[in-house]
Length: 209
Image 1 (cartoon, rainbow, N blue to C red):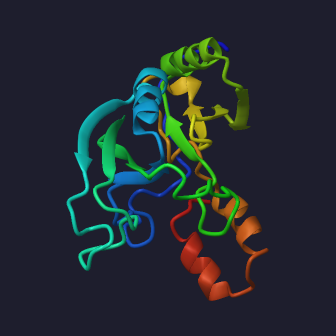
Image 2 (cartoon, rainbow, N blue to C red; image 1 turned 180 degrees about the vertical axis):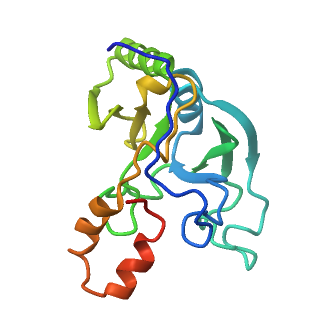
C-alpha cells in the first residue's frame, strides 16, 4: 500500500452546530472486556497490539458477591487490568475464574461485535507483520470507506478486533471526518427508518448539504 502523509480535513460536518453536532461525551474512558487468562491477554495487548499496561489491581472484597456490587462480575477479588489505547483512552479486562463463564456470542443483542482501533500508516503495517509472525489469520486490508482501510483479526480470547488506518492523513487521522456523510446521503438512509419528518430534520441538522 502506498502511504501518503498529506493532511486533510473533511468539510462534510458542521462543527459550529453545537446543539446537534458537538458531543457531550469526551470519548471512551475505558472499555471493559473479559478474559480467563490475564497474563496471556496482557502479553498479547502489549507485545502484539502495542498498548501499554498502566494499572493492575484486584477488585476489593465485597464488590463481587457482597452488597457493594455495583455491576461488577459476581466474583470476589477479580484481577482488573487497564491498558493505554492512546489518545487518553483505556482498554480494561476482568479475569474471570476458569470455567465460570461460557464464551459469548459476539452477534447477540447487547453483545460486543468487535472493537476497532485507530492506527497510523506505519503502525498499520507493523501490526500486520507482528500478526503474521504469530501465524494469526488476518482479513484485509480492506478499503471500507474512501481512504479508510481496515484489517480484522481475533485476540487469543476470541474477541474480534479491527485496526483502522487513513493512509493519506499520516500520523494525525481525522477519525470522525473520515466517516462523515453529506446530508443527502444520510437522509437517504434515515428515510428508510422512519417517515417522521420532524425527527428526520432534527437528526440531519448537524450535516452539511
